[in-house]
Image (cartoon, rainbow, N blue to C red; front, top):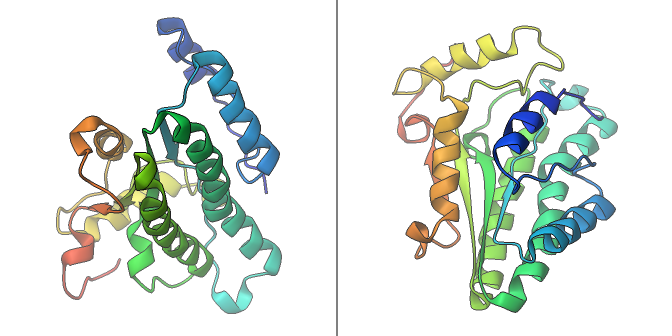
Length: 221
């Protein structure tokens, strides 16, 4: 269930402008990878301030046609991966009594969208993991929050849909704002939640969905 994408150009561009960029390739659902990447960050930078859990995968299939392998694959990436990396991050952040974790969630956790049962369940679980971990971690000075993202024009669907970006752009028109988000718009919310400007925000799911979750009777196209 590994999806490959060439990240070398982005890594090269970022690395050339800053020595604070340290690329790491691993299986997000692997406990060993989670431990190694946190250890690597501590070794290189001496501390861990922020974790953003952004990895996700999806498959459009009715629940009755969903295989156990497909279910496990989606849950392992979208939910187990966030759990593993968050656990290791909190362990690393606790000694210095500060840190922030931001989970990239989805408005799908609030709606019964057909054909994405596993994805919606994983994002619902991520929302609850965010809340529980926030309560457990704030005594150690660590804030945990999530972004409830709507449709974002990314390559999320490209592994099974040749026009995935176009599909997301079209579906985003159902939101009151009339369009899908650009990745930078979600990144800005995540950066805010990770910053000291959000110092009093704990356990929140900040919706960045163009108003989709607050409208009544959305018309889906």
